[in-house]
Length: 380
Ligand code: SF4
Ligand SMILES: [Zn+2]
Image (cartoon, rainbow, N blue to C red):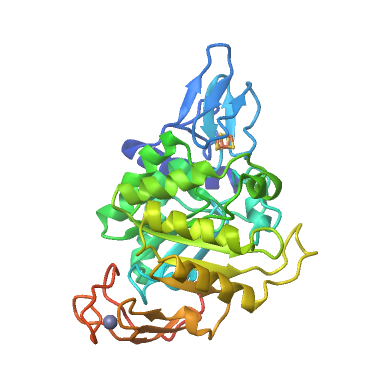
C-alpha cells in the first residue's frame, strides 16, 4: 500500500520535475533540492531562504526543521505534504482591497521560520513536517486544478509560512496558477531574505504581511528572531515591485499596544509604504504560550485606528471584531460608505464601475471588482 502510494507520488514528482523541482539525492519522494543554498565546501551548507541564514552540518536540519543537509546538499523535506486546505473568503486572509467577495483556495503546510508565543496555528507551524501525522499528498498541479474546479479566484499560501518553509512547492504552484489565470497570495510574516524576495516577489500578486510589532524587543522576545527590519524590508520590496500589499498588526495587551508604538508604525506606513495601504488592526485572543494575557479590549483597537487615521493612513480596519463599523471601507475624501462588511461577508458594494466613490469621484485603490457575498465561512 505504502509502496504504491510512494510510486504514485514519485510519478507526479517526475512530471513536476520537468517544470522545475529537482529530486533530493536521498531519493525520498517528498524531498527536493532547495534552490536557495550556499555550499560551504566542508560538507556544511548555508540556507539562504530567510534572514536566519542557518549553517547546517550534514544530516542536520535548519531551525525551521524543513531544510535538511543531505551529504552537502540542502533539501526541502515537505514537497507535496499539505496540512490544511480550505476555500476561504479572501476577506478572511485578510485582503479587503484585492478581489473583494471572492474565494481563495488556501493552503498550509507544516513548519515556520518564526516561533511566536501567541501563534494561533501553532499545531502546524511549530511541528516537524517529517513526523506530523495529518498530511495530505498534494502536488502543485493538483492543487491548482482543484482551485480552478472549486471556483477560486486565487490561491493563498497561508496558515504557517509556506512561502519560506515550502518554497519549492509554492514556486511551482504559483507558476502553474499564473498559467491558469489564478491570482497568487502570500499571507506571511515577511521574514524573508533578500534572495527569497528576489525569487518570490515576481510570482506573488498580493501579500498580507504581519507586522507583529514595531520594536526589535518584541520580535526578540515573542517571535525568537532578533530584528524587525527584514519584515519591513519585505513590505517595502513588495510595494516597490508594484504588488498589492496589505498589512496586519495584531494588538497584544501590554506587548505592542502603546500609543507611541502604534504612531511610529502608522508613520512608517505613510512615509515608506503609502497612505493608501490597507492596515488591519486585529484583536488578540489568548493562544498557545500566551494564554495568560486577556483578549485585546475593543477600545484599544479603536484607539489604534484613531491614531493611524490621525497620522494619515487612509484605509484602517479592525480585525476579529465582527459587526464593528471599522470593518467597512469609507471614502477617505467624503466619508461615504463604500463597502459594508460583516465579518468576512460583503453586504454591500457601493463603488462605480471603475472603483470610484459614487459621491465624490475619489479613486479607491481596489484590485478587481467588489462582489457582494453572504458566505462568511470557509469550506471544503
Ligand atoms: S528557512 Fe529555515 S533553515 Fe533556512 S535559514 Fe530560515 S530557519 Fe534556517
Ligand atoms: Zn467620496
